[in-house]
Structures are given as C-alpha cells and as structure tokens.
Image 1: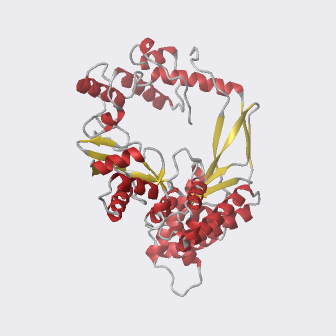
Image 2: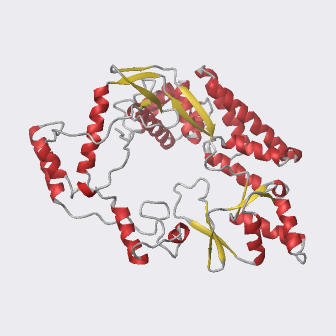
Image 3: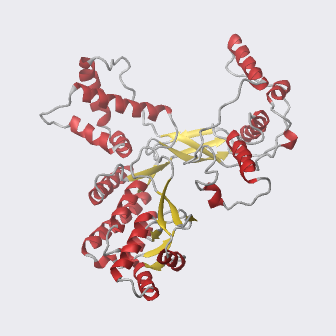
Length: 461
C-alpha cells in the first residue's frame, strides 16, 4: 500500500507499564462455588498474597474498605469470616491481581507511565518505580465543605461571584456540584436565587475577590435600613447556593490544591481559631509528609509514609473513601526505532482516510443542525445562553446533555467492504488484515478534499 503520510511524528512517546511484581496468579482450579475449596485453597492463596507488602499497599490504596476487611480476615481473631464473605474477598483480590497482570492503564500503584526514547528497540523494566502521592480530590472537597460551614471562619475569607453564573427571568442561576462520593456525576443541576437589589449589589461588588466581612460592611453602607443579621443571612445564603465562591476552593489551574487551602486558611488568620488551628497543623504535617514521600527513593520508607499520612487524613476527615491518590513513574528504559514512529504516522493517515465520520462526529453534526434550525446561519449566541435550559444545552456526550446519543445508521457500503475483509481473514485464519490501496479506497467515506483534518493526532495502542 502506498501512502503519503499527512503527519509526521513529534518524537514524544509515553509508555504505560504495569508494575506487576510477579507470582500473583490465583489458584487455577479453584471453584468459587465450592465453599470447602474457597476455605482451603482460597484462604491459603489470600494469606500468601496479602503477606506481600506491595500487594497490601496497592489494594489498600485502591480500596481502603477491602484492605481493612482483608486485615480483619487475616487477623487471629476468634470470629472468622463467613463462607460468603471469604468468597467475596478472594474474588475481589483475584480481580485486582488479574488486572495488575494484564492491564497497563495507570491506576493507583498498579501501573504507571514513563518516557520512551527513539533509537534501537529495547525495553528494560526494573522494580524501582517512583510513586508520587497527593490528597484525593473528594477528601479535600469534603474538608473544604466542612470548613466553609464554619460561620466564625467565613467572615475572614475572600469571596467572589461565580463567573459561570447566568441571569435569566429575574434570577441568578449557577450550576451546582455533584454530591461527594456519587458513583456518577449525573446531569447538571442548577441553583438559583432571586435577583433583588441587594443581590445585584453583591454581583457587582464581588466581581473581583473581596473579604466577606468587607462585603458585609459595603452592603451595610448601601442599605442602611437592613440589619447586620439580615445582611449576613443573605451573604451566607449566597455562599451556600454557590453564587459566591470562597477562596478555600482552588482554581482548576492550581496543581497543588492542598497548599492552596493551607495558604488560604493562614491568610484568613484561621490559626487563631482553636479547632481550625489544630486542623491547619494537621494539614501542614500532611503537606510536609507528602513532600518528603515524593522525594524519597526508598520504596519501603515511602510505603510507611503513605500509611502514616493516610491514617492522619482519615482521622481529620473520617467517613470518606480513599484519602490519597497516587501516580507511578515507572523505572524503565524503553526505546522505539524511528521506523516504528514513521509507520505510526502512516497509520494515522490511513485511519483518517478510513474514518466513518470524516466531516465530524455525529453528535456535533446533529448539534450544528439543531443550532441552524433554532438560530439560523451566522447567528451570534452567547455561550451561556446557548448552554442554558432555554437554549440547546450541551452536545451529546457531555455531562448534562439533554438529548440521548443519536441513533446509529444502517449498514453502509463501507461496512460491507470491512465485513468482507473480516470474513476473508477468518476463512484464511489470518491474524492481520493487510490493506491495499483498493481496500483503503473502498473504506473511504465521502470526498476528503473538503474535510478539515486535525492539526495533530495522538495515537493510543
């Protein structure tokens, strides 16, 4: 097949590598439906793998509840697990071990990433992987929620109006966050307050960050007939509704959310509030321990630090899932030849030529058609109005999209050509399909001369 590459590689390659330490296979002939086999073989295998510190570390970080239950099962207590509980534990650990062996997708301590060089082919994966730990987002959000509810702390905080607010039909509307711990974010939800004169004053006065108590003073000067309690009640309500955002919440561009929270608390003088001062002391210790962890090269020491930090974090914010999140930088030397990257560039060109949607995804084409039908060609519609309930909302596939994914099409000539290639490969026992120029032409949809190709492509295998 003769292909003139549309793209050229940039020399940037990342490898996803499992950190599987080996010898983690579950008993091959274990019958999970046989209680006696689970009690004997399953329990013995569970004790074997759970005795390994790297296994305990990886599983406990991914699922603290499972880790605690396995510790309980392996303890010498007089009350052992029921057959059902033991079977569930064996199956859960076996699932993690099989994932560790077979999936290189980064997830906690089970897999990581590393840079790949260009040169002679080689892959030397060693065992000195570096773990970089940070506080989990849900843990931090829960802590911030609790701190924000402290009415003695709020007056010291900086507040600003939500930039994504919408004013519609005499109300100020903001999107609310999903519940912490929800299995799925669910559709976007809205919170609204009436756009009264005091609320309009707040929107103008807090357009840039201002201290809560200073904002209350400005409102008292603007509305002298309003009592201080009424003013504070309004401002607290705006914070609770999400119209006003405190500076405890880190911006999306911040890469160290814990340090942001510590700095915000210290700037607010929170160390003069006794119980918050204790929490601030714990946060300082957690931050220092994480920094020490992320710079240590001794895996055993790093494991001990993670365990100590997780215990301190769970005591500070109990009842939350994993307190720590971790990424792994693999200890490996990997290189790919130049010709492999050139072949990848050619593959990108072929993939572009044979795509089923050369002129955009079905979701965006549908969204474009609905935009034209609603507003007409050349219309300028503010993004907030477009995404509001009274507009089109988000395109299909986005969180909170109001329409289901468009129904897929009927069988096309391209599908028939592809199925014929698959059938021929099945009949001949071929493990690969080698495309010819004629095959590529048969799999090409539409006239690509009018298609706008992406400026760059990322390939993932």
